[in-house]
Image 1 (cartoon, rainbow, N blue to C red):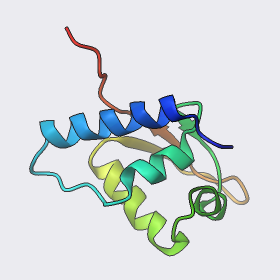
Image 2 (cartoon, one colour):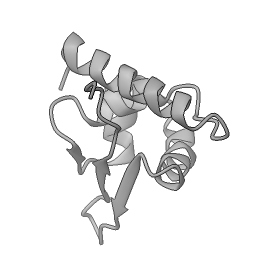
Image 3 (cartoon, rainbow, N blue to C red):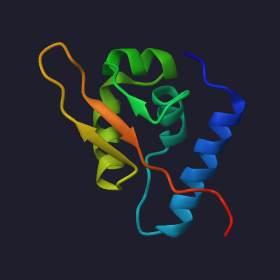
Amino acid sequence: MPIDARRREEIAAAVAAYANAHPDVRLPRRTVELLAAMFPTEDVCQRSLDAIAAEGDLDRGRIASVLRRLVEAQLLSRERGSGKVPDTYHLHLPSQRQP
């Protein structure tokens, strides 16, 4: 599912805010592209790594390690799938609203 420009901008701004708030955490280079492919409309993704790679024109072999790093950074949470059911990821980006 293609992502609209506004959603992509929201994800990019939230990732930038996270990076600014956590300068000691180095996020993977293609974080925004991966998150945009995974979460084009909602904050929940339950798709196979192959489907995510195809959607985002990403290297399937690297996606698992990038996802682990994003879970460690607490930008994502993961619920393990079973059998043919893929893992479920929940997006946890900081709000961009000003106080």
